[in-house]
Image: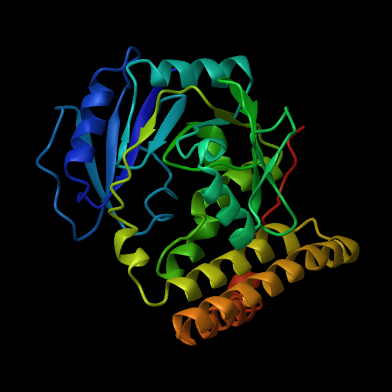
Amino acid sequence: MTYSIAIRTLGTAGEKYIEELRSISRQTVQPEKVVVYIAEGYSRPEETIGKEEYIWVKKGMVAQRALRYEEITSDCILLLDDDVRLAPDSVERLLKALEENDLDCVAADVFKNHEMPLATKVKAALSNWVFPHGDKQWAFKMRGTGSFSYNRNPEPRCYLSQSCGGPAMLWRKEALLRTRLEDELWMDSLGFAYGDDALISYKLYKNGGRLGVLYDSGVDNLDAGSSSSSFKKSADRVKVIAKATTMIWWRSIYRNGEDTRWSRLSALFCFAPKIIWQLVGMTILSVFSLSPKIVLSYCRGIMDGIRSSGSNSFTSLSPFIQTKKS
């Protein structure tokens, strides 16, 4: 199959972007095109490998991917952030995994949750109910809480998955367009599209698509943080995360278009204990840091998320689950 590369960027990743471009030029299977979708108002980087085509689009983590890709005619599109480094045969491995497993999309495992230090794993479990699982069939599984679980001991191969991270995702073009990323543009209005790639990949899975994660892709995340650096320093970070996670859960699990009275009740029984647990944690953190703003921001985020999820603009979106693949 043929492929082209689509990079979303603000043009501010610097040396890490240079490394990415160089790694693209070394691929054993070369792309037909390298298209860089840069946010409006930002300058084109000086770095080049001589084959990139720059297109200015509306700024936004989702907006810079929710495109029709009319300038790309390849069978597949490799979506990249601007801070990843590919091994010389990374795309060759991804293409092989896509074809051999009959996938619609395969993502490189760049965050390596299973290799996190024990302290980090415990923190993820306590703070966001992100746990390891022992299911040898799946890479990542989505839970009724809105959190994912990760394979605790994967082999270096491709696994089916229900969701994934998004720094490097190889899509069949028709599957990418069928998933209707434009329906999730609401995430950009949050100020930072927290969890956008996980939501979009889960949408593919829930609509009957085949998603995979390749654990031995050779792709490294250099983490320039060009889009998230200001968000990490923001005083509203806790509020935005709480609002985003509430709205993601509401749209993809609670009211996903295939929900019933019993599925909604089950989803509530999963989500409510998580919120109560996090509220207790935020309260303790506020007490020890002498900053009541932390727990107040969390509460405001949850309430804003509930209100926004019930708004006309949100409920009028196309259903999260629209079709089932035969």
